[in-house]
Image (tube, rainbow, N blue to C red):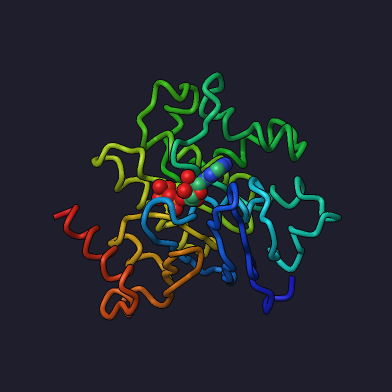
Length: 251
Ligand SMILES: Nc1ncnc2c1ncn2[C@@H]1O[C@H](COP(=O)(O)OP(=O)(O)OP(=O)(O)O)[C@@H](O)[C@H]1O
Ligand SMILES: [Mg+2]
């Protein structure tokens, strides 16, 4: 791959629901090894943007490229390209009838057709990266904590060796005492060079992990920049209010 090509490029992305404009021309790029964090009030279209990037939701117009391949081109094999995008959902989306280990190996054996024995090795390495000990490998999702579930979901995505990880509020369904362990794992992965695009309301985490913050409002990215700069000197009124509201909520 040409290293000058961004891992992800989104150009003039638009999406409406029932005539209501949600995304109104979003542009963004994520380069290899970068972590960008998307912020913005509830309902502004953050999840819609991530879902469009993965083509789980079809954009109305605009273009999306992953490593130079246009996902929005109808001739692109989207199922194949989707394997390169790790998606982590707020509510984990684990398979409840499968063990921890099987949750991680299933994509490898069924989608990538990797033999079971090799899949287990890859899964073991992914589970190690998210600090899930092998004593939990044979447990079912109902038998582990929310923080462990989310770390297994991250391992499942990682095992597919994605070009980018997309996280949609990965800690907002967790009890407060479990948030830290998940953020720590995401931070370790980012620091180790995993290209990432993260939707979160965890501002301290965003400050630590992001190369750049992107604020969405009224369908557009209204402010973007290095976290220290944006936090120190927010320009847009929404961004000022948003930062103040999060800090007042957390005390
Ligand atoms: N499938 C859908 N059909 C119709 N409207 C939808 C659909 N999905 C999302 N919306 C609407 O689009 C808007 C943006 O939703 P989205 O979930 O992307 O917001 P968000 O920024 O992720 O919010 P939150 O912070 O609460 O997760 C909302 O008003 C939502 O109700
Ligand atoms: Mg959302």
